[in-house]
Image 1 (cartoon, one colour):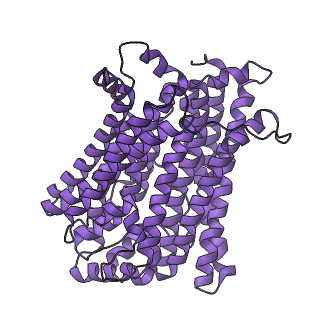
Image 2: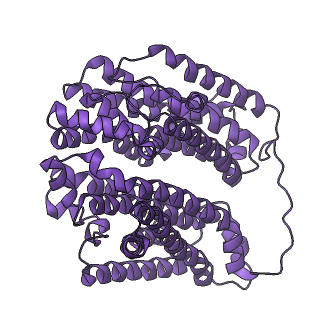
Image 3: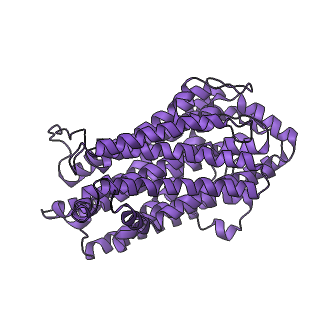
Length: 529
């Protein structure tokens, strides 16, 4: 373990921008939800109606999580259920970035040639990710307690976030030993997270009602454990034993496996790929490298869209007749509560498509860091052609995904109202209309990669800012001048809303200028590595 403190300082310095961004962005979300719910459901009767409707909507329980009461704190806890997935995701990406990604670039071998212990890097990466998780939980709990929520419930809420986060710190540490490279390690860890989400979703969806019971499958998921802590609703403190035990076992297993493998190798060997004569050249390389990721994103977004579409017809009963709710949802467009719900849901899925595009763009940065770019460009491939080969999928991938999303949401909704032909076009248009804003994020990533490649990952922070402005800023009443900073603010609110072509043209123009500028900048700068 010699040198762990020094490596921890190094990793913290390298994450001095990214880590504070996700800690603050996620940690303050519960407070914003609290402000929103307090305005939307000002009376106990409003909250009771929302609770009963939500508890009997399996799609909502599957997507967000179980709801255990009509108290304001319990409603905020339910709405913040997505954080039990976001925090583990941020934690596992942090661990892999400072373990296997460092090995892939050769920096671990360089640092290891000094007086640094074999397991110091793994220990430092886990310590940094755990610190981020704990700070996120502390910010969330402190913000709620300072806003007047019960201290016990606020502490339980923070612990629920910390519990699932530290479990996936251990999961990522194990995946870093199993995977043959950083991409494989991320894939293994995210697959475990996805499985945990599915187990929790299926378990909770099958127990709709106000009895407070929990499905068996939910108890098999670390995400389900955190949900069952039940902040603000008769807390079950003993549940914390489960994630504590799982995190301890995972951490111990990771350290044991670290001593059994060679540096730069994984416990699962790389398989030889099948020879193929199709899609040869640099575009074929980009397709083979990104097809798995693009497919996973598309399927994931489509599944969520199908859940939201099937739940749309029941939204009227869930949201009730509150005038505040109608006023708030009207800001998201649509001529009815259902249209507003679908418009809001599609905007959230559009943010997912933007994340899909960003992950595709950042692949070129990873290839440059690992010297793959240098090898490719040593042949007859030009810089512009190589970068454009990735841009084709970074721009086209979200377009395909959002088209699938439109059908996945529109068909179930249309079937629920027995009128697919009339509702599908509006839902499909609402999904596809997210693309100009998505492409602005794509262009932002390329601009950063072209001009300041070391800060390419900062585009994730930009997306986080847009999420805060678009999804929460409208409800809490931020000035329109501030809201206009997000490209998602300028999109038409479909279905049900009016379409203005000029803002869409401006977004496309800004994207085009950014893409050209980024490509030209990359053409004229030195390669890193």
